[in-house]
Amino acid sequence: MEERKQSLLTSAHLYEVFNPYMNHENWVLKVVEDITAMNFYKGIELGILFQKDIRKAIRDIVEKNNLNLTQYATPYLKSNKLSLCELNKDRREAVIKSVIEMIDLAGETGCTNFGVVSGDDPGENLREDAKKALEEAMIRISEAGKNYGMNIILEPLDRYAYKKQLIGPMKETVEWFEALRYNAHNAYIHWDSAHEALGEIDLVESLNMARPYIAQVHLCNAILDKNHPCFGDLHMEVGEAPDFTTEGYLVPEVGSWILKTLFDFPIAEGIDHTYVSVEVKGHPGDDLWRKERISREFLKKSFELGGISYQ
Picture 1 (cartoon, rainbow, N blue to C red):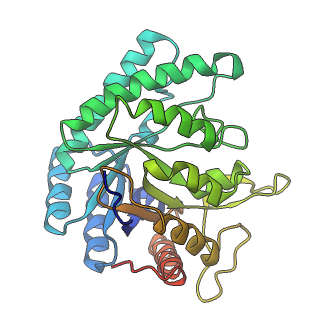
Picture 2 (picture 1 turned 135 degrees about the horizontal axis):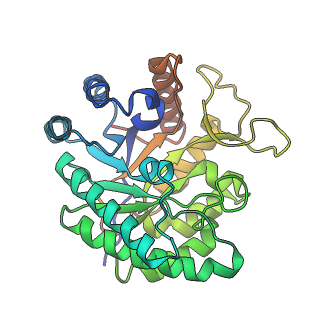
C-alpha cells in the first residue's frame, strides 16, 4: 500500500484543562460550544458522557463543524480501579463489558478516537500473562469500535517512573502492538511526550519506534528530576508567551522538534489525520480559560517553529 503524507491537526484536551467541569455535563456542553466558536481547534477531547441529550448536542456540534471527537474511558477506569489487563477472567470480562458499554455511548456522541490505558503492571513474573489478557481485551473492544467506525487508541504510560502501568516502554510496547494489530486493525497508539520523557526514553527514538501506529499525540510538560517535590506526570502548565519559561522540560522548541519529527513520517495506515493537543490539568479555583489560552499559544508556537501549518 502506498504511504500517505502526514497530516497534523490541532486538538483541545478539554477533559484536562476544564477538569473541574467534566462531571457536570451541561458545563461540558458550554465549554465545547465556546471552544468551537474560536475556530482554532480541529478536534476536541472529552470523557464519557452519560446524559443522552448532551451526547446528541455534542454530536451535532462535531458534525456541523467537522471536528474530530476523542473520548477517554481512562478516568472512569482509573476512578473505579478497573483494568483491561486484569488477570482474573471473570473480573476482566466485567471490565470489557463496561468498556463496550462506554463505546456504545461514545458512538452516539460521534466519537472517532476512543482512548484507554492498559492497567497497572502486575510485576515481572505476571507481566506476560497480563499482556495476553490485555490483547484479548483490546481485540474485543476494537471489534466493538468497528461498529461505529471508531479507532481504539491505547496510551503507553511510564512503567517504572510514575504511573507504573503494564504498557509502558516503547520498544516492548511496539513489539506487543505489532502482533495485536493482526486482529485489531483499528487499534492505534496514543503517544504522550511526558511518559516517554519520564521513562528516560529519547523522544525521537520513541517516535521512530511507534510511528506506524500513532493516531494521537499529547505534548505534556513534567519535571524530570526525581529529587524535585513536583516530579512526575502531574499535567503541569507549559510556560506562558512570550518566553515560555517553565520548570519542566517542555518548551516550544521541544514541542516543534516532536511535531517536525512526526511530520516527516508517513501517516499511520487507516487514519486521515493525527491530532495533537497540549495536556494541562485545571484545578478548582484556577482561571481555566487562562490555562486554555496558554496551552493554545504553546501549541501554536510549536507548530510555527516546526514550519507546519495548523489550519
